[in-house]
Image 1 (cartoon, rainbow, N blue to C red):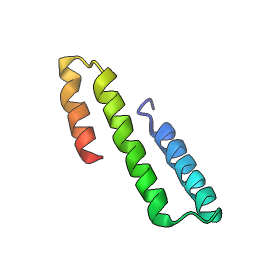
Image 2: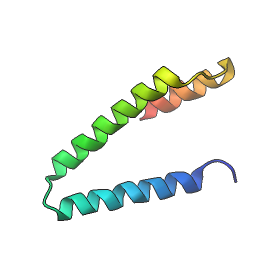
Image 3: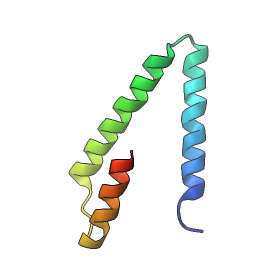
Image 4: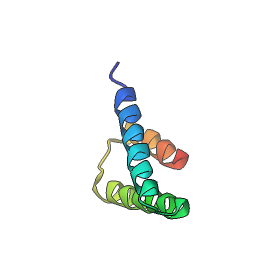
Length: 68
């Protein structure tokens, strides 16, 4: 379709797979969640500093960022 649905599903599946591995190694659930939240924040910082969107895409990006 071109809407990146497959990418999102595969990416989410890989995140869950990695989380399962960490949990099986004995890591605390809260630590895994905190790690994912820190990774999200760092990703958003990098995107904000490097992304240069045309005006008509700025609103879509801001709305998506708000949902995260």
